[in-house]
Amino acid sequence: MAVRTAQSKEAGRVPLPLTSRTDRWWIKPLLTVIVLGFFALYGMFRAFENQYFEFGPYLAPFYSPHLPIHLNLFGWNVSPAIYILIFPLSFRLTCYYYRLAYYRAFFWDPPACAIAEPAKRKNYTGERRFPLILQNIHRYAFYAAVVIFLILAYDTVRSFFWDDGFHVGLGSVIFVVNIIPLAMYTFSCHSFRHLIGGKVNCYSCTLASRTRYGIWKQVSFLNARHSLYAWVSLFSVLIADLYVRFVAAGAIQDFRFF
Image (spheres, rainbow, N blue to C red):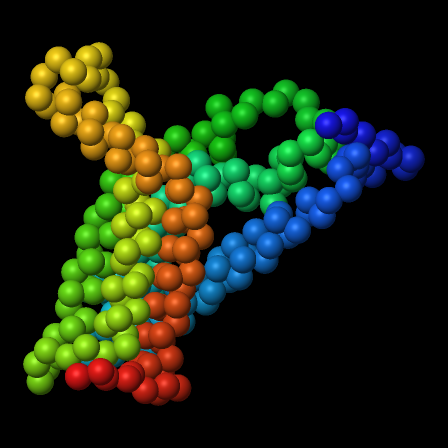
């Protein structure tokens, strides 16, 4: 499909990308900006709020694990969420799918298929220089994400056990619903796929290599839907955290099934 690039008539003005596409190609990057922007603002708000994160056995995902670190900075008690969010945030920011999403939506690099970039860049180095070279920490961020996932899985089990015994509340159900897409997103990661199937010269030579090949095929199946799990898990974490916040703040009551 042909692409036309607008030429600036004023010196120093950034030209806008034009294209022969007649569909509303800009809707997807716009929605990405809105959703990711809202999630970033909510994450910052929760990171600095430092309250309404615990109710009974419920612990808000943005504050899990609740580290016993108490720091005071210029009279402000540093929120424990500050220490936690850096790990899942680094995993999502360096995720291959999210890179595609926010490069297109926020940087217009490019904004969509068959759409020219706003301006030509000189000395393009990709992700080989600072700051984009930091994207290479994704494989290490994956290890941290696995630890966070295991902790959230523990929080999910713990949400059923109250001081007066075993109960199933709406919060418990939300935690279970949240942990499933989180598992799918975490373990459909490209880094996990490479970890399972990489550095093997012969998949059929040994029992161990055949086992790894079988797991690799399953992870590859999940990996094909990685973008779906990325979005669903983003909303599920947000809903779980919002629910705990509203219950802890007294805005709503936790409904108990039994």
